[in-house]
Image 1 (cartoon, rainbow, N blue to C red):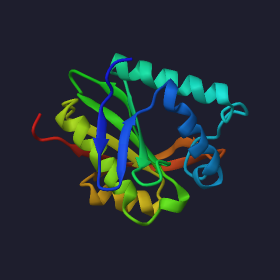
Image 2 (image 1 turned 90 degrees about the vertical axis):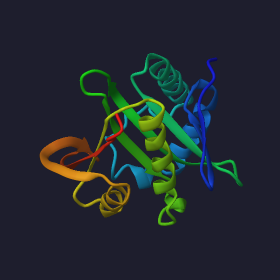
Image 3 (image 1 turned 180 degrees about the vertical axis):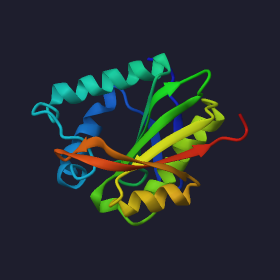
Length: 184
């Protein structure tokens, strides 16, 4: 396996999702299923199976190698439990040099700045190592936690898209935001 980046924050160790650590993401997704389903697309019936989790890890690693996505998972330093994830998908090089950002934080780790810590580390990597120019992130208008997190990280609102994504079984409007790397 190729050497994977490891990012360290005050409270977490962050690495790239791959087949050998996919079990940790699956446990996180199962434990936070009710919490996350309000903000994520509806999952297929086999999504929470061990094999499906392994395949997601395998695909995430291949996407990292191909340069099309980086799926970071963050482990709490003291408990070694997965507490957040931060995904940079749809990476496009010239002429855009941009990607989309998605993230989640465990229900029991909300409200303590952990999401900001993990996402900030991921953004730093994407701007300084991957050398991207633009990161786009969307949130539902009702998701005030995400709105606050993105504003805190410097994202600017760029628009509003009606019926943009099917979340929790319904077409949802989304607020469109971006962060620009002025050093690229």
